[in-house]
Amino acid sequence: MSDKLFRVVPIEQVQDRSAFNSGSEPLDSYFRERVTQDVRYRVTACFVALSKDGRIAGYYTLASASVFLGDLPAKLIKKLPRYPSVPAVRMGRLAVDQAFKGQGLGGALLADALTRVIRSDIAAYALVVDAKDNTAADFYRHHGFLQTDSEPLTLFLPLATVPVLTNNYK
Ligand SMILES: CC(C)(COP(=O)(O)OP(=O)(O)OC[C@H]1O[C@@H](n2cnc3c(N)ncnc32)[C@H](O)[C@@H]1OP(=O)(O)O)[C@@H](O)C(=O)NCCC(=O)NCCS
Image 1 (cartoon, rainbow, N blue to C red):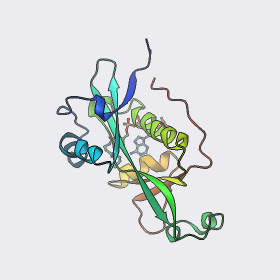
Image 2: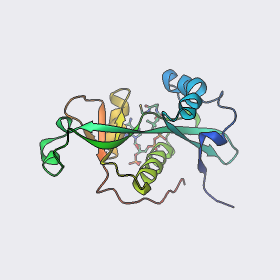
Image 3: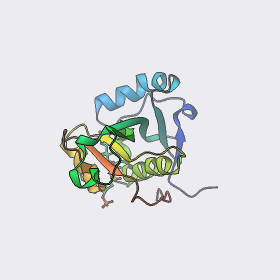
Image 4: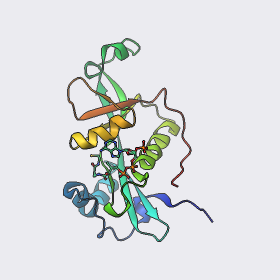
């Protein structure tokens, strides 16, 4: 039996999402009402952190995306092929239930997402996020994300330098 505080499962393994409350109404209502339809139509994938007693502690979504070369800093563009854009993965949403905030779960879910993307056989240059506000952007900056040139709340993390991480939710 695992001694980890949380386990991360695909949303298909989760039944009742009604109690989830991150404090962000758009993130909560999307998770409660919309996400399974988007998963069914393969518009997104969604992964859920469950606590030891089976409560939903957090979730994130992943989908394929691209980044326009012109949105990247000049020093990074120099190393990339002259295509109009490079492949990426977007973490469209990330939320931790209020009862579980400040325990390292947000960072652990980010690490879980990075691990899935880096282990994929399909290449992606970066993980991209659209922070909902400056506080969220600070969370991503804290984890090494860089700002795109076009949009201050769109941040990205180049994946070539990210090591494959070992998840540790303790
Ligand atoms: C942002 C959010 C996911 C963070 O989750 P969390 O579980 O409380 O964060 P963690 O405990 O994992 O924090 C991990 C690290 O990030 C830091 N951190 C957390 N929030 C931060 C913020 N807003 N700005 C800067 N750093 C932050 C912590 O201090 C911690 O640092 P450390 O590893 O050096 O000790 C959570 O607060 C949340 O769900 N917010 C509402 C939704 C949201 O804003 N989502 C973001 C995407 S739009």
